[in-house]
Image 1 (spheres, helix red, strand yellow):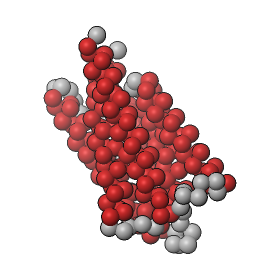
Image 2: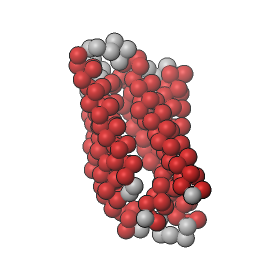
Image 3: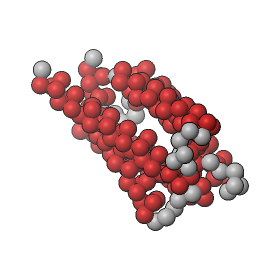
Image 4: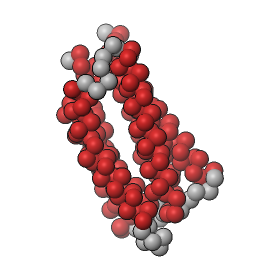
Length: 192
């Protein structure tokens, strides 16, 4: 039980910071007019790598504060659960970047990234608190709905020009909301 509360405390700031990165990255891409399939995959791969590096740095700081090893057995288990699906997402992004410009579909790539990220979170959930599995399912379902809506063409605003804002919602707002949820419920749990 103690280990779950440690993970919960560690996840709140990570989710908040990653959420802020997601929203900021979408705003930056729009501000400098990096809209369209030519920039999308490579840009968001860069954002993801930067986010992972910052997350690892924050985890390292938290480990030092708690006087715990950075690469502990629980950390290895979580990483081993997540890495295959995250690498699959990286591979899809690289393949998307290598495609001809007229074949690229940023919205579909974003949906696949949501599904893979959700699967990675769900896999990590076997070693963490229950809520991370639920968050994983939210991403998986959202990604599948996005693929269905895109295929049926029932949401006309799901176009290349809006793909960055889709990423801001999926990887920014949802992570931010999850981080604030963890922070607020952590404080209410500590008050009891």
